[in-house]
Length: 298
Image 1 (tube, rainbow, N blue to C red):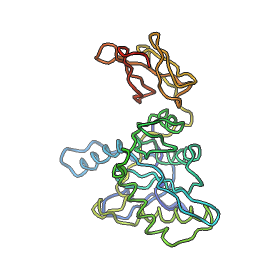
Image 2 (cartoon, rainbow, N blue to C red):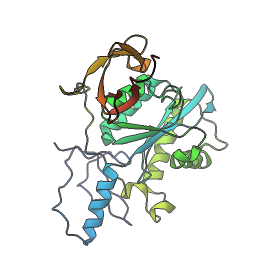
Image 3 (cartoon, rainbow, N blue to C red):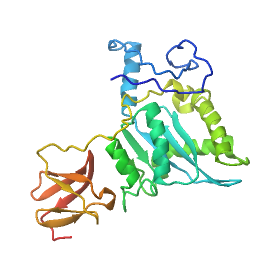
Image 4 (cartoon, rainbow, N blue to C red):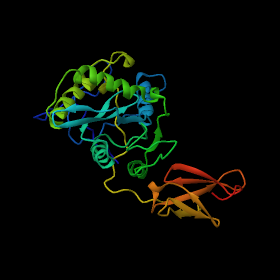
């Protein structure tokens, strides 16, 4: 299946001939037509293209960091900037002015981002709504939707902001370069400024960690297209499957175990471990918890 080349930069009023492919040290050329990327023959080991192929393979598994880093006032309320940042290239996939941090709003903007750039292999996210908290409630309706899309999830370590250091650095740069001592009328005014600054950040601004290259020259979109319909949940025939009940529990071998209320109504699979009486609970590809039948009932 081919994947459309995403729009990486500024919109264009006309459709010029396709520009050269991105390369280090050159100003990226972009068009936003739905064209399939050019396929390259396998590179010989040690050739310059072999390094490019290795870089693209690494980027295909590169996580994206996403989250909110607070809000700032506007004349009509508040703006909560939602950011999605590619961890390898620092390319900003999304910079959206949101009125709040609610799950359905975030899901709508992530859907637009995934349609444009494809599905990431993994997402690293902050703690708290709407992402969940690993020590208390790691799963929310939003993260359940991400798991249904086949995206692996990780949360930042509590009280360790350096886990999301690149995303936090992006927000500091945004505040210094764009938000400092500036007054915005409303969210639409914010979004106009965000769109211009995001283009500048991706296309024009050299990055020290990229040897002064710009993020667009290092970014590779995901080959996994966004599905307009969620795929069915299929655990195969070998694993016992239980449906999560209204209170977030499952029944297994005559006992009831807590899972999470976020999975109410969904099927989960149980897989045995190498230790007698211990089973692992999975939702789609994600490990949820371990059951120990040797311990007293919960």
